[in-house]
Length: 120
Image (tube, rainbow, N blue to C red; front, side):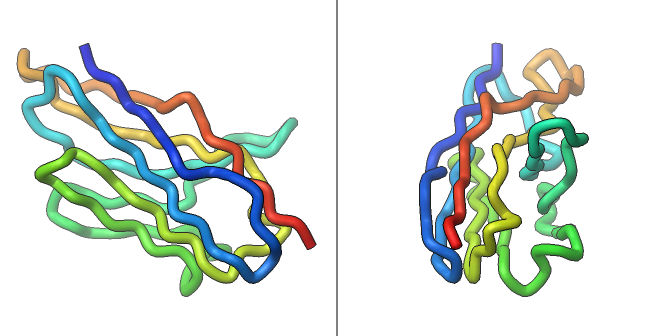
């Protein structure tokens, strides 16, 4: 059994910063990648940023230069530092993890989502 738990959302004014955290725990052999997605009501979930076990990162064009994803492999935790936040960043943010379990099968897990609200 694997759990993926997010924290760190909230309300911030435009131009402010927030840091999201996501920790994976349980019967984990390795983590292939972790990332953050966001989804506005009535829209598809979209990639915000992702990072592989080797540290390669990928960002949506809309957040490049403002958001930074990082990872603590020892803690199975990924962070999303969000700076210069804009009202259009308001969304529910979901953590995603591609995990190889101790039985050596690969699974995709989602967190429960955390609300980020940016006021103008």
